[in-house]
Length: 191
Image 1 (cartoon, one colour):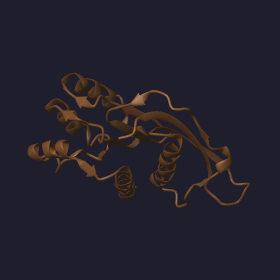
Image 2: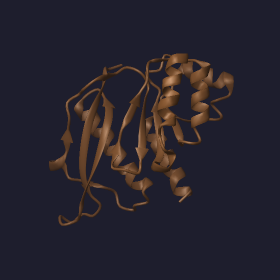
Image 3: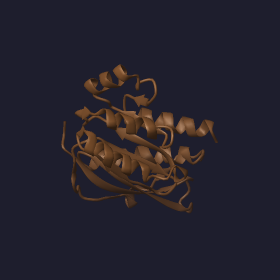
Image 4: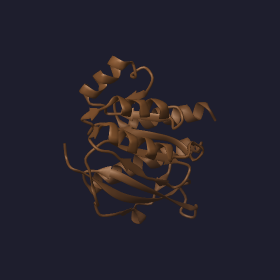
């Protein structure tokens, strides 16, 4: 697996095709291996965020105004994107091994998210190597409150979820795009 970094991306977009339409911006704190991958992630989020807001138009990205920052700190463990009502999508990162200590940190971080200001949270589990029962409990208690969706769960972790029956409780998806599609559809149904 390629080394992942936190890479900020700012997209400027229009909701209408003509040049005089109002400009909007979206700041995504992506987790990606390089700047091209970071831009691809930000583009996916721009489409889904517009859909979550109930907008019928797809964003028209203004390529000349795209800003991609330099890779900063590396991200080695699972990470969660917080998709809120603002024009910023931050991420939280966690250790590769979610033991009792890191489960407490995860719990505090997730409890700090206001669900009234959040469409949902998508947790990319691909880098996860271990999960303790205390971390499973955190996911179980937060999944409804935060509309938590998990994606890219490694086979050993998935087997643990199946053994304890959490695979039937949690929203599990094969990839980030599927998780965002499901979250967007859920929000549309409850609008």
